Image (tube, rainbow, N blue to C red; front, side, top):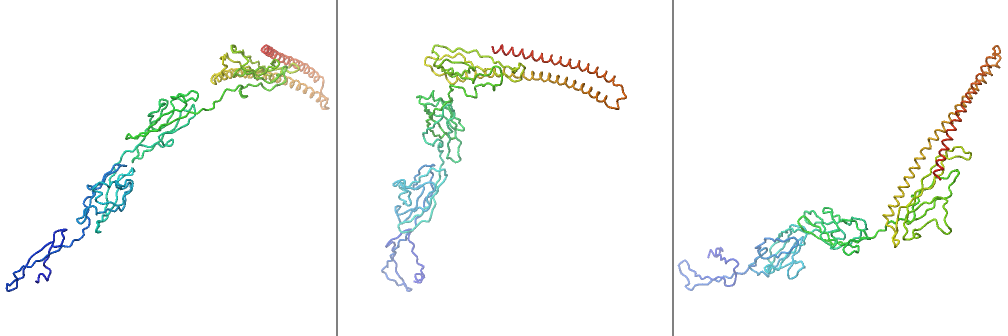
Length: 509
């Protein structure tokens, strides 16, 4: 009895065992005299059930490919409770995944915030990655049984396996197709550009991969610069169907081989081209120098005569029949007639003319007009206009001839200073002779002045007078010699002028 009173008698049921009448024992009580009741007594033990908390059994995490989906099963995550079945063990999500979501296959697209161990056992729980460039993810949960016992917050770790992503084209709208307009005669089309989302980012290469007109294009593999192999011409389209819309497909590839394509529709637009005018610009038409006083003045301004696209300058004074215009069109020439080249008129450049008294003049005589001749040209039966290239060649040929004639005129004009130098020399000789004569005469006057001074009366004036006569004779001879030299100089200048004038008149004739 003392042991019972002290609580030394203990019964321990089996683990997690419970129930009424769980155990029974029989006993009898004996006193100190060894006397006892022969009828045994029975002790029945009832074990009352106690709720146990769920226990984490498996938490190995899961592995999923970038942008992929992974089923989380009982082999990766599981809890157990001896008191409750799997359907009564409920998971509650604390912190959800950062780069994806948990969902049940029975409700796809909807983030799952709670589920049971039975859902995990049936493979209804899955993790969906958002495709970002991440290498890991995680979420936390707690588990509670039907009686309220719970498992504390637990973290599940997810491993993300990177997947090479195809690059993305960002140029020209970045779509699968794009339309571009380019002007004719221009090779450059566009700069194709793209980005790679992988970490670390990969380098990209560019190529032409298709399109009915792909042979007409080339692209820089490093920069993506797309261009025509030959600049397009709107009037002469070379695309497959001749509508000036060129179709080409370009491809962008990363270092691991992933690629993306874009089809470009490139429209070539017409550009207004400059046409050869029916008249030459004023800057290209040679003009005569300002008119000066001369025996034959210029009759009037130069009148242009248009022969097709080429301009001929007609000398002043040319007369036309009544009703005939100074501007002639090629339409007036019969179709079967061929144009004959005109003989260019030589430049008659007279360096010196003569004034009204017939004396030489340093004024430049008027330069005769310059004529531009045309080369042989034949028009076809439809009177088609010559192409701009032919007209340009004709124009530049005329300009070259004009430059040569102007160079010749400039060379003739350069001889003018020679004549001026000779005239200046003759004038200098004449002035020198006059100065000498003036000096001699001044000496005689001074001698006469001294002879009239009273202080000189004691001297004999006859020697002075004799000397004066000799000096007068010498002075006379010197004056005659100077006059003869001056006449000789003038005769030489007149001879040169007369020869030059004859040459000019012969040239003009």
